[in-house]
Image 1: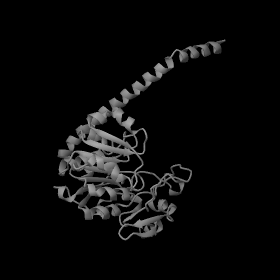
Image 2: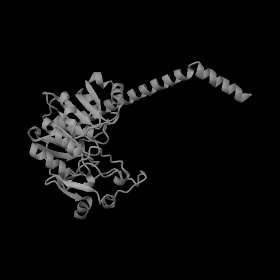
Image 3: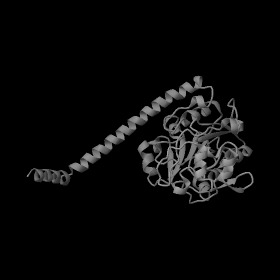
Image 4: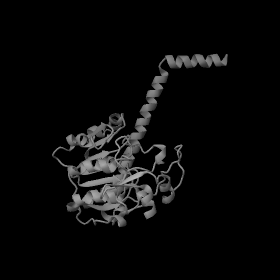
Length: 322
């Protein structure tokens, strides 16, 4: 009898629309909580940004995280305050839902106009929840970026106005995509490098438009390009390497004629080994392995390209040279 009463109560609850109302209220509360958290992040980030002006003596001293994965928000602030960076526009490729990114603090705190791109089919809706689509004129494009389509994708946004900052983090064809976008002459370039490839060999994985680092054979660590490869691409085009984040994932380049008093650095000096754990077993589980040689041995048979001469080699060659 008690079970029947509970079932009857549940039936009335569902038929009467109470469940739908509860779900709607819950969703509203989640949105309010997210908005409050974002407001706090911006407020604290703004305080940190003001402190950089007087307290940060180096790029890495300036690191703080508001919306970035690690300390990129602070590094970007440091460069904007000390270099001649204009216009106030950005393009970021590889943002997932835009909850965590290299440019969101710029849009939130400095109202930079921008374009975000990701294969996420819900990206426009995710952006709308931040209200940055109308507050900072941030646009969203849901697409899978390749070497073949990336220029046509971003060119309408950039137009003739130039670009202040370009950030690429697509866990794969980063080198080949960046190669297509350098002609747009962004003042700052942020690109994720694969620190496991070391600080000497200028290498990238071969181009494959359908590449997916989650392939079990790649152990989640075979992707992207080395820091030396990006320096080889950007230095002849007028860019100076100014540093890497302490986490050992993102490298920062600035147009040499916009540096002011920020010093350029060479690859060996700027390189940071990774501090985070990504290596996975073939079943997808994190292994906890941090030793570089142990990780590279799992992918030693896979190909790389020496970007200085287009020579194909194996990961094993850079492992032996380490």
